[in-house]
Length: 330
Image 1 (spheres, rainbow, N blue to C red):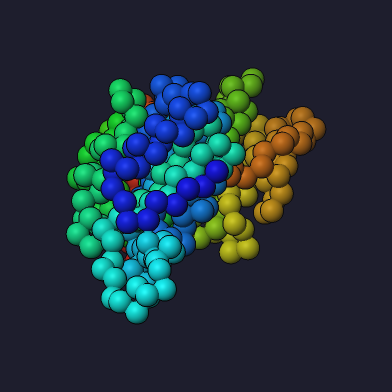
Image 2 (image 1 turned 135 degrees about the horizontal axis):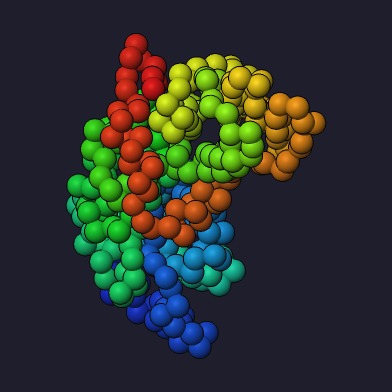
């Protein structure tokens, strides 16, 4: 169910949601959090698709604010105008909205806000009346994050702040800003994308013989933030030199090899494959399922945690992402 609310306000939106809950014989008390999405019109549906799927694991109220909604697109308020008023100049509304319920909203409800005029600069005023009472707030920027998420109007009220430097229009600048302005409530999905790599590598190193690792080599695409975070994590964890090999044809991390005295351990996932190969000295290679993590997978993991990530914090404090000759360096 999709309901358009042209030229509206937060009181009307809240009343409509209560009405829909009453019609369906349910309440919003089962929502475990409020997810605030600061997005653009172009990215809106992609972000809502991920949030919709993630909400089936974490029932939540999703509130998306579309910052770049142009007045030329604000036609919702003109849909029911009489013919005699069509030639009259209409004032652009301050707020248009859309409410999605049921199959169109996962295990919760979705509220899309299209602010105009001065309301664009007052996102906190817009969302406060719509928050689920006594539930944590998570702020998510699917692409371009503010320079300092903690001081953003939405970020300041959040228990957890999720960014995605890899999908920003300027990845390098975003990484630098996030490192400079990091706080304990911040996490980036570039880090979440390597969860399966970290788990598999830890499992490989847990098998005997427990010989020391001498050096490490990681391969993946240039300017790929997860590649550099994985390299830094291995460098800190193993206290050994780590070499980054850039693969121009890859779209994600393709290989990690760990050298030790008895040979080389490797975890390889060819570009475009959902299967990885584990190779250990003296043992036959073993294939495992290891698909590239989707946006939904990463978002679901962060909504599951909503806690400070101490390992990610250590990487940030180690100044893991710096700018040198316009390249990511670890």
